[in-house]
Length: 94
Image (cartoon, rainbow, N blue to C red; front, side, top):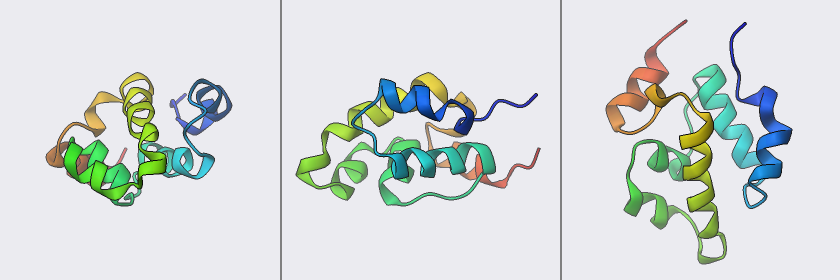
């Protein structure tokens, strides 16, 4: 059986209450269905800190840390970390 991020949604959102449901859903679609993301999440996945910070407003800056910890803890390592990793994740089919 294939692991999906979406199947752990409730547990993950309880562990990271600063992350909004739509933000989690965007990440789950990227991981589970290999769909592209918006600028903030894409910058995090590609390890572009300054771009990620530029994409969020000051009231949501706390989300950045939790999103990084969530990705590190629950997302397969092959789908983040550089532009190349994200590119290859989106192009692969399984």
